[in-house]
Image 1: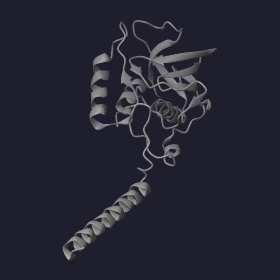
Image 2: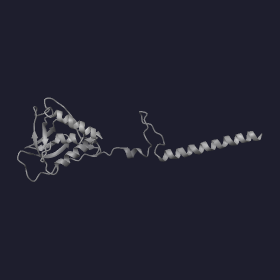
Image 3: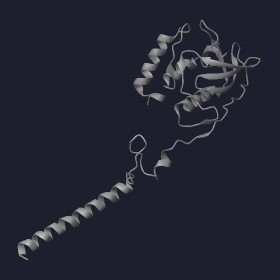
Image 4: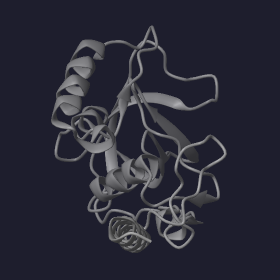
Length: 206
């Protein structure tokens, strides 16, 4: 065998070894970065590796009831709030349990029995609870239609400090506008508040 031929084989052998080493190094990097082993979801999109998948799963828990403490002093013209049902619905005590549906806004849905604490719907409900907890009573104002098809009272809800809860949910980005005639008295202001929250990336818009 000629020297030139032997050198060619040696060069080819070294190249092959270097390629194998490079592949092994790349595989090690991909494995520890979480990309390998490569898995596809049923829709053909990369689904991560088996070890990292549980960390990404939503933590579902039993739904807390969100009952509110009764205020020490009842304000004239106010009704006592007993419970937060979800971001856009509360329950008041006016002789009997009565659900109040906030006019003009719509929050993400919340599970009846189980909830994801990180979901926008539950974060909206908790935000409302935090606003109510120090002094759980509100003043109600109405529009043209007083009741929805589910028997809930439709209202603009005012907190003891004068803020309208409907507006505050939009400002904080926890609600979307929901314009349903004939209850459109504040529809233009609500639309503006949603646009501002969306531009800021607040709440559910982040």
